[in-house]
Image (cartoon, rainbow, N blue to C red; front, side, top):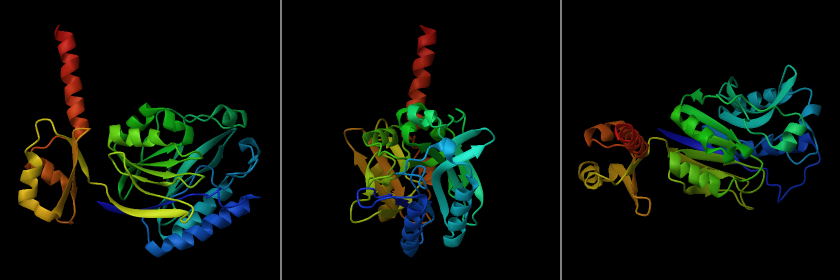
Length: 301
């Protein structure tokens, strides 16, 4: 499935922020520009309304206003909108990544599991450990927020639970942590951060596109049904696939990691059919199979 995704940077290198309205106005102007490419999904940075301001979470009393803002924007542009803001529930306040659908309906939320020490001092409560990806028309979308990047097990759980891509709404860029997570778990990552480091990483750890001082937002069309496979026991498969499908599939090899990818290029070709026809095993399934045999052998000896 092909999906068109845009991601936003708050571009703090190029602008000053004096109040919440400055951030909201910036987001509205950027989304108006983004609308020219008619994206399916747009990602916004961590606590984007309050970013760059000396506002403590505990001092934000009305968190519904920002939900209404996001809902209105999603509905106006008929997009899936994902972004982090404060969410007060009872006596607790969370740093929550919210996802709204094209109608402006809240599909689900993810509460930051690992807030920083200063965040907790400012009133942010840690989210529950067991949080699932959010269902959308594109399949399941996982969520992670900023400091969460340092707990790879939480990313893995999102992938194991069926996430097809993960939105990383953040203050800091995350850097090579994101590349390694993407590579290990074969997951697309959409990073939306405060500075000019937002972008999209493919499912083998490569940046497809990034913001810079000339572009506060970027977009790309990605094929979620891009398979990642290990070369072990499958060296003959790519050539066989090419012989049958020719330029209807794209195959790339990654020698150092001993991996290759298969990406269908036309709508009449489905990855699941290719996997079945050529008896392919994905990289993650191959690793799981090896672990199972290793564990069994330990028990038997």
